[in-house]
Image 1 (cartoon, rainbow, N blue to C red):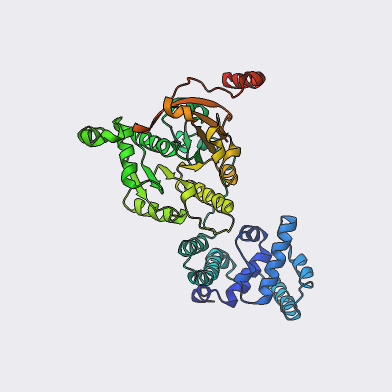
Image 2: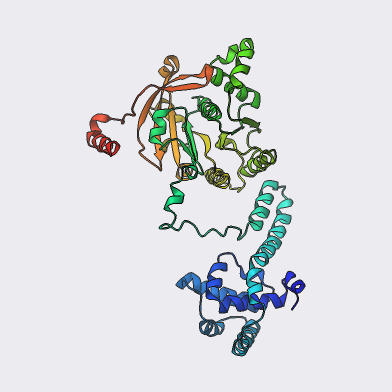
Length: 444
């Protein structure tokens, strides 16, 4: 049998791939995750693969050849049943004669076969989507089909990999501008995680994101800042104010001072503007690919803000779209091994709250389920005059949540300063036991 015949993945190849699934149970269990009966041309191939998959799903092990032979009798289609019986009979004869030729080659090419067949299916789907101009969705469908089976990492071998996971470079953390917050976050913004800033409308979410980005750039990290509400120019001017501490309205008079301050930056800041509801996660991926082609590796990705993005997965229910956007952003963080920081609006009723809890997340509570860290920011009417506000740790997968930090905010220079040396607990008189527990945890 020639290699060219196998390249076409014709009936001969498909026969031997099913042979391999039946005879090599280890191989079968490895490939079952990605193989699909619809990848095969013949009905009896589809039915036998379906039998193997159903057995594995139920018993968590690949069936033996004897089990498959008995289950073939349950195939409903009479023609397929007879062909499957003949196929199994032929396999028995081949195994009695000795080793079946080319099985190692077939197993080696099995991933390519699955990718090719999956890509065919994706192209048909893409052609249908093209009628409705769903371009981002088309790119996503094609990309997923190409990536099928590409991750061969079996995961962490827990007992053997202890030295590897304790290496400093494997624990990528970018500090926030606030040391008090970094203590609570185990150092700062963790790579591969989604961090959300939540606040009511016009409370200063964008200023917080700018300060986070500016501080990271000062430390030498490359920051990619996507803005879907403010213009790129206005966002850049806010960075100027934050870094130089020159009020926004006075920047034109002190341009030389700003230039001098920017010359001290160790990292790069790239600000990319998209109109509201025009950028999806795929749009961001495409832009990040361009940045990498220019030799710039992103260290921190900021999205201002997630609620204004377009979902790749269309749904008539808005909360499901917002959940999908949050999931996609977190996936980008995982793929690029960087922290993702974004913002979301809290409900209108939370505007007068002393501090804002998870229950006040606007539109979709599911966003909170997806993220790893959620920091809410509250400012009552009197806080605007006093320049004050409160951070509330609403969610923290890696540590304590439910803590408050009082802050001072100067929007003219996009800067927040945490006033408290240590966080406090809401309603402290009613929570003395909880405070004692937290104090004990800190000591240990």
